[in-house]
Picture 1 (tube, rainbow, N blue to C red):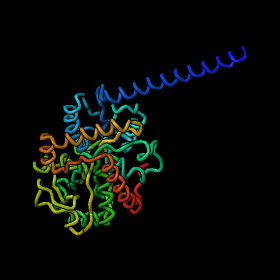
Picture 2: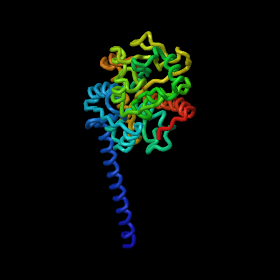
Picture 3: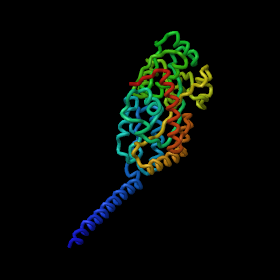
Picture 4: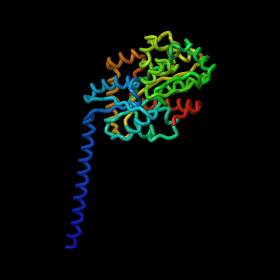
Length: 335
């Protein structure tokens, strides 16, 4: 009887272990099935700025192609505010199932970490890169009433009246804000920054002459330049753009080495399974080859992205190194 009593606990223990292993296998199987089924509902691509800007133009073009490729609706949701931190915070806390994504850009990923004393997330820890979408040239423009035909004349005018000229941007930490902060650093001029809640709202005041200057992505500005409602005075990229072949770059106008562009890419919360991230990156790369994307980007002089998550991760780190220096030298603070 004694041996029989000691055997019963062993049998129970073995049954318990088998049951635990079976439960674990079922749970793993379900998780694997969920990954295999991705996407099994609509995918939300959050844009951290108001409608009407280059970020939305890029996001909607890519979302349309991803909808076709993935077989699920990929929709854009604009969520402006806090220099992009409101949208970034929401997506960082979203369920890590691959159905909530963020459109990252130079401000949220490469500038905010150095220009903000505190953020409710860590861009390198709480997000994972998926793929670069596009690099878009920044243009510097003025209202036609400004008596400056080029960047040199604008700088001279601003130096004579420190702080008297206003420039608008899509908001604190937006690409246009950063471009002008960088330009002031290298030229020594002093302007007054007027932040808005998006490129669309700030263009309303610029077109009406209530602000004198702005910098934004080419897609948002080119129609107004072609209609004569704005005057372009410089290109932020190292090379001139096909849409405005006679417009010199900032570097050509006396500031060698100057380079600033808007760039956009997709990121996912850090907990999203690697398999989903790779499938999404593959879909982005396929989308970059679609005629609708290549034609749209060519029209706006945008450089298509693509590549692996590792490629985009390296790009982000390089941009962080460059902008950390600019933030430190300019004393830029976004809090």
